[in-house]
Length: 370
Length: 140
Image 1 (cartoon, each protein chain N blue to C red):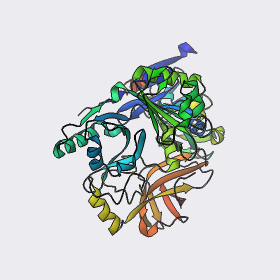
Image 2 (image 1 turned 180 degrees about the horizontal axis):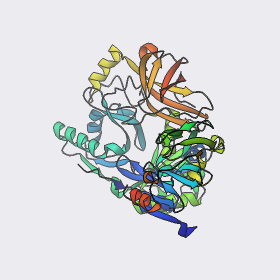
Image 3 (image 1 turned 180 degrees about the vertical axis):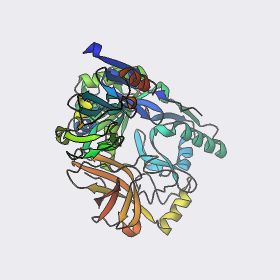
Image 4 (image 1 turned 30 degrees about the horizontal axis):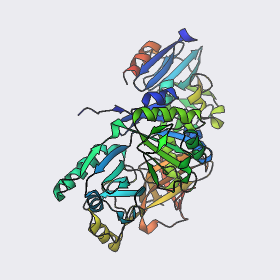
């Protein structure tokens, strides 16, 4: 089957801003704008703007939409009020394997929105529709609006200033994971503006995401840059999330990974009984796991990046594998996350990484890595 | 300089190919001046690798054979070896890269050069002309 590569709707605007284009999850989008390390640091210290329109967006509506979603995902949605995002929730298979982590938005009783990961835009839709039909939620409709909308993330400690410049100064009053449905930005109506992101906003910075139509996204991207935000690409986004210990689907978790070994507590409610994968999740929790996700830090000043698949050793004993690695400009060190056997997961101890035939010491640390 | 380079445009981007250099199929460039060969990686290669954070250089005096790895580049995306298409002795390495590895990104054909070799002979059949190299990368 030929590989289908699509262009993100705002690719031309990215190019106009200096984007170096590459491929991610079947999309052509900007990997960086010249220097991803500077983009990373700028996001921690000032403000960056990311076009994250490659992420999937769905509109889910119908009278029983809450009931349907509640049965589908790992987390109890009962506490998610109107105007609030769920935080990450999981689509698990029946073995509690992670298919995707998605974000849900409670707009009102009949209307919820979802943002899903780029590699899974079609897959999640099929999965959700299969359960919808199986359970008989014929009144619930799921529409994929990815290609006719855009998602712009303004991230960093000065993000609120850019939002004010864009004409939506009220953004600063939004609580974390709160959104303003239909907010006006640059005098035009958006789908929503939320206080969220994936760069570590709750710890190290402050960020907003704007979901709007394609033309408006282009205007916001250009204006944010004119207002002093620096454009940033997917490489910086990846290194920022890794510093925070956020998991990337397909790389740090997949259908053969359960949330317990991934230590992905945020999106699960262990007491929840009735969801796809929930009974199995409870069983795994009670039984325990044999491997566990840990953070790893290499020696400061050493510019070595552990790669996905790198072996983790205790002496000659292979005890785990790296799933993501990066060079952290913030720490001036290589950082990684990976899974190690629970028999060797001692926080604070050092294990060896097999880097191109040589051994490099890495300290086991907890998340976030900064 | 405009007429001294070829600009290759693909759906992924634009790549410069200088007309005063020769190329390898593995995306290195070579400059031949008498018995001294300077080696670096092309604009195309640096754009594929993305931002380079570390360069491991060989020892001066090291003897290298055809297709030997002479340097290792660590970028945010991948690790890549730089291979020499010629046999020779390493007579100089670009020490500036130790402090500023990203010179390979910002000036791949200039300050981003990697090693200089003294060679006894060159088999030019192993090398690509600028036009052939441009043609190769245009098919990405």
